[in-house]
Length: 464
Image 1 (cartoon, one colour):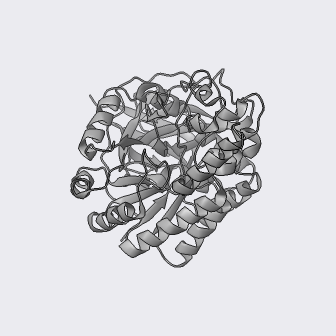
Image 2: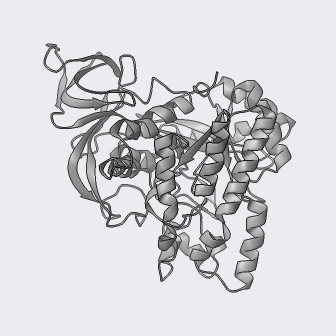
């Protein structure tokens, strides 16, 4: 059955343009844009966006729903996590399927399809975590690229869990150079960090703040540098995830100045939080334990600068929530046992809009780093990430003047605290459409589990 929706009177903002336009949606896709009031379109539904922004739905290219980690599981399911994402103006996530050591990529991918299928409120895709590089795994990478899983994450951290050594990383990069895949790298020197963890605990340094002190910025920079050189040897592109340290940004900037296909992502927590949070008393600091860790405040300005200069291209959340009660508390008396991860999938679009309000980035750059570039980076553009004829009608009506206070009392993520508790923001999501269907209607959830569909992806659209 055909359906038509018209969004009238809003300021349409994409990565390239800001125009006052009416938007016509037909059968889940954007059909046309027109000068306001010039088209007498008939529609089943009309949305008045006067005084509001009309923006593409956010693309969060780094989430971990239901991730097993540190003897527990991330507290958001695909159902609760995608619902919370929609509340925050995100209409597509790319989550990480996990290959366990001794198992195939296919087994990991099938397990994640089973978790997500029929449960998501918004559209989703998958990256593949590669934990066990061998000849069979390398062959499987080719098959996954063909079927739309075109990015593979490796870890220079977490020995004994996800860790790959330089030889395994090089082999995977060589394979991706051939099959068009993109290697995503968690760049921290995990071998050295483990030594520092052991030494800190032996000194009786057990509080959450020591998590940040042992995972040194220099060890993030060293691993970033090493990953870049391995990618250069392999002739492969590289995407470095959750960049937190100014020294790592400098490594990316240098590589990009040399013309290498190297890309960087940061996250809102590194733009807004710091080691001050990790040092909060009474074990409250455990709420802020994630890896890469929060850095001292002076790193924030360098990350914003990297976003302005395009040395960093994407802001994702690395959403990986663990409740304070019963999960973060596993690390009382030993910071190394605190599950690593922060909740944030609901807050990203609003926090980045605050970056616009505060003068760090422009409105178009906001849309670029949160919608368009992640869609292009991971092969979903222009289906996702923009407002243009033919694109999926993933659209957010955004009130740039509404004020809100972030709180666990009012958020929709399945976690018992907010990393941004009490923070005042200007700007708020009002209405969200996913493929033309209302998921959030004037601050009411009108979506459903199962509306979201799996989205196969093409290869990175920044490569020749």
